[in-house]
Length: 215
Image (tube, rainbow, N blue to C red):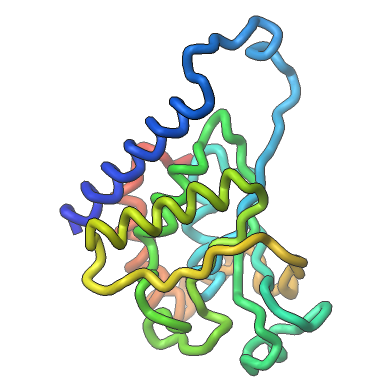
């Protein structure tokens, strides 16, 4: 795991450096841009298996304002959980995240994404099997798409994972919030068997690895 953390962090550093070069990092912000009273939020949507797990992880990051569990990437309008679980709608279980880019970078969100699930298993995370559990990044801008693809390419090139990454990377489509009982699930149901057996071990590793990024 330590080698994985170091490799992912290194790739993130290279990506950030390239981004600064391409964006003209020599330009200094003016006073008016640094004293804005309003904050512009960005949005990203991740699929990484069961959305209960993804939600629990991203809720704890400093700079993340909202995490909403839902469905994306399918063909049916307003799908229900039961319909998505059938595997016939084409949707993935996802979490749509709004965040303050001045507090947490998209690079950090990607780093958490790669480290908190297995992006090399097709349509599966552990015992959760089906297209609804696929690894996916639904980008809300061309820059997000470019950075996500760059991470995937670099991680594969460096063979950070023992198998090739199969994460789907595409533009965001219609997002449908999941039913109310799916929202804030781990916080409300942390003692349930699934939470204790599946989510808690993942959370323990995440909290240790990203302790400096937590609320």
